[in-house]
Image 1 (cartoon, rainbow, N blue to C red):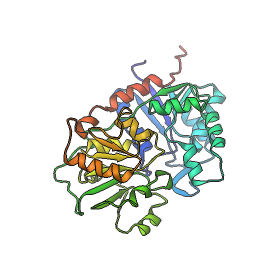
Image 2: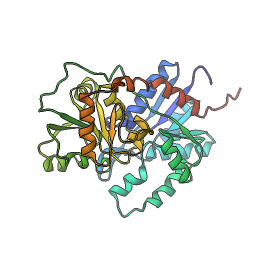
Image 3: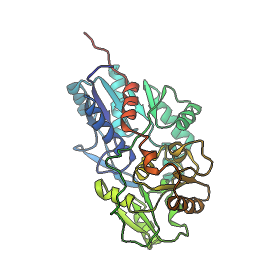
Image 4: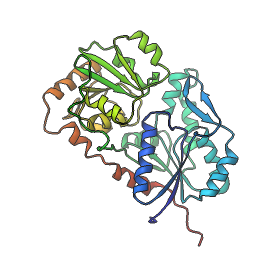
Length: 349
């Protein structure tokens, strides 16, 4: 691997969106820069964009082929990574195939389930066929967990490579003075407020104390009206997000479709125990070998039971603290995995 690489990352997901994909790519770029590499992002910022139907927070940039071709030529990257299957990702894919440029892709979300949840008339098998077409030419398709790797292999995907996730333990940390001004115990969920996140499974639970939701999305207005006792705090970042985590008691992750759930590691780094369903994302984060619970999380098909178990765990901690667990997942290891996976163009000289 060359000592210095120029790496181009193409993504339709970028600020002002606040989600795991954006945080993953931002953190990756910073860590790659600290290793001496140069990273250039191709994002919707500064381009003419159109809102995604039913999800206006996501902006798609169309008619960018000439602009992207110029940017690729000017930067002359050693490697191109296409992070998302949106309009920019499609355009970059087309340019790479036309000019014989190797590229890698990533499978960040269970796109088929997400689209089907929003547009029920679109069969999942049709979406899976399109996703196989999109990712097939990639020299590597990066996935966050071994579970997802096995699932995609069963769907006919090839060239699958593991690229795990880490957490910035300097940014996310416990804070003794972060207690929030709400009746306890405080249950917090962080992420997009959208139908595919299954957040209503959390909001509908009969739990003592106060429920907090951090994040924004198309379902926020309707859910805030339906569940007026829940505190919807909107999108938070930086120290405000850390204090929201650290000032709560239990992190609740109701999603059944996330491929990883970076927010789970962030909550653990802030000292919270976790309640979730025993599905791919949470199970792969806290350990696939656990049956129901561990030192840091309780997974159960009865989400209320998981929440109350996680609260009991928080009040009577075991040998491994959530913080200590999170410290095992460094971003440097993830960055080195990424570097190992990318396709490096040979030196013509």
